Length: 121
Image (cartoon, rainbow, N blue to C red; front, side, top):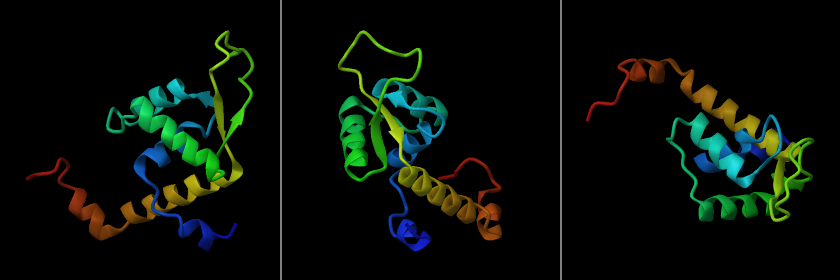
């Protein structure tokens, strides 16, 4: 996959980016993904069960996530629990989105515009 191929898929939906970012360190089950996303975003990104699992299904279909065995020590008595890991394609796409956002925020004219802090309406 080339950089141009990745860039054609950008920008990512914020929920998609948050889910991919939540899985960068280790696989997790759905509820853990939800908790991680909400914690890391300070509550700015929320995932109700319906949208979470629809998004996960789409990410699985697109090859960005894959179902994986439970991590060592997290085997569950609940056989319905599914664990998800990010694929190399998902990792590359998340990295491309992070780079895009960094580049956007590093622009001097934007930094000056954001210097005031909180938005004023």
